[in-house]
Amino acid sequence: MLQKKALTQKMVDQYVAVLESTQQYFQVLPSQQEKIEVTRDVRDFILAERNFLFQNNPARIPFGTQMILMGRIFKEMSRLEKQFELPEFALDETHNAVYEFSLLREDELEIAVRTVELPIVNEGGQFSVTIDNNFHRELHLTNEMLAQSWLSFGQLRLPAGFHTLTFSFPQPQRNNQKLSLVETEFSVPGGNTCFGTLETNLNRSKLYKLTVSYLNNFYSNLLLFTWDQAGSIRELKSVVGLITGVNDKNEQIIEVSGGTKEVLVALCAPNLTQELVDKQFQVTFSEIFVPTLLLYPHELPTYAVLPVSFQKTNVTDYKIPHINVSSAQKILVFSERYDDWWELVGVKARHVRANGYANAWILDENPRGDLLLIYKGEKYFFYGKLVSLIVFGGGIMYVCRRLLQSLKHHG
Image: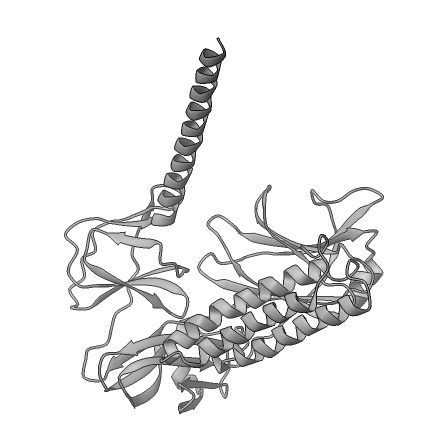
């Protein structure tokens, strides 16, 4: 867009008006839950817009009026972004976990975290929970606490409605990864060079955060690649262009897929050298801890966390053998990133978010047989392709019919 048509004052005014209207609509949202959901969407939108403009900006926008207009756009985007900096989103995921939940009525709840899922800590470590930025509890750990199955923060009376809970814990140690010369499909002898690091012993049920801090004042086409790797099989997962001329950092959440044991991270650019990589790039790889959190009325019996077996029937579908648990309340947790397209078939259940990121279903009845977990998006994608083929075939039939009519007319 920017290469084909120069920016004008009118274009920039219209774009800024869109950003300002976004902020105005946000201010009148009635609930904190809606604000959190909209904040996610707006932040993703701003990131996508900024990445697009950066790709078109460095060498293609001349100095003078065009640069001033572009500067105004970036200034307004930064201003809008600050308006959407809710406290829950300003936290570092490597030592904070954010949970969302709703209460139908005011209740006194006990708050507990599963100890075995906490990061490695020693006696004296400090943990805390904060709810709605109003209620705060802290714990200084002892060896006796660490020996318990659950770490309790005591009881707290909360009002009905939507709540956010932030669980904070000591920041795990971050190790800088050494980048060394690697061969990839993007390596070209005498041209493109790649330097990377291989992360091993990854756990499929966990999330990781990749952070690349850098100063790129040499390359306009410096690319950051990530691959999933299992043995000799390597699958490209993401490609990111690193901005030229600034100190910056790129952060990615790595979700390890089934069968993956390693993740390869590499920087690639023409004639990239080891000396430059060591001096101007820093790569860290950290585990994201999202421990199981329990909120329950104190008079109820303690919940039991039990493993559930499953069978993967295809790429997106799972079969779950009959679940036989005697407790009145059953919650089935599926530790993949939450998505509305997942559907549990075979039992009456409510789809909710668990542990801050995962899919979960509250079972309203006892399953009478096997359950199916299906990703509906795959089927809709198939139907979309089928409709496209039907439309395309109908178009061909229409053209052929008109052609035959034309031939008969001229004949």
